Image (tube, rainbow, N blue to C red; front, side, top):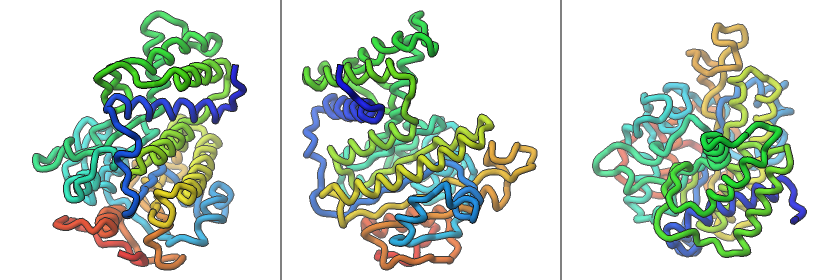
Length: 387
């Protein structure tokens, strides 16, 4: 048995998720890379109130963002969400530059073209150059492309929900009559291993089809050992950490021009645990810092990448009829007012820019970074950046 840490295990699982995707499409991992050219990464991170982040009592929850990243960033402390403060609607609005008012659970596509579609259509990018990788169960693969006839899925993003790999294994094992409670975790192991070789697998927001698995024997062996170790231990890594590991694998293998990542560990707030909610914020803080360090390490990203980090919204006020931090549906400043950090290639100089901005201003900003044309968007490019 290999002596693997929990993170080693999840890194191995992440590698297989990406390997499986590429092998099913017969892609060489270098095919989609653009050695030159700009890269943009957007990280959205669930619901965080200002008092738990950029406030005197909140700084302790974001030590890396405040201490390591803020001094080199363009910081926008007054960002507003004027749309529907649900995950699917908010992320669709950020990606399309128009406030979306859709089904909250992703049953319909965005009503306006997304950046993924504009990028792929105008720049003729391959599919592996545009990705959305998410921890959030409120999203669906519909978010990767709009419903418009001249755009749509043929120009959309690859959408992956890494955490769903493990969830689906548990659900399927239960459906087949295996015990899946905590005292018999090993019942899930055969199901996880079988999923590595399935030809038609739809559980991650994309389809697997074609020949049998392309995993070579050593890779498959490492994965099976990793899964055995994961099941044997009783301390799983968080969903957001798994999402980060899959995202880093995608960056290494495909170096996409545009990548959106959503973290949602802090949404444990819906179950009423304030301490776990704060723990989710701290995990996001660490993962954003690790993501920035990865950008500096990878030659395909170093010195050509702009990273945007923003909460999707705040949370309701304490004492509200919606149980305060549990939810994010009040029409209040606590829910609608948030912030954004921008790092990297597009930043003119580290500064705090107090101009009020809207979340929908991010889309025309990114369009400007990629020099996209003929986009009729209501927002304005962000000040303080090289566009």
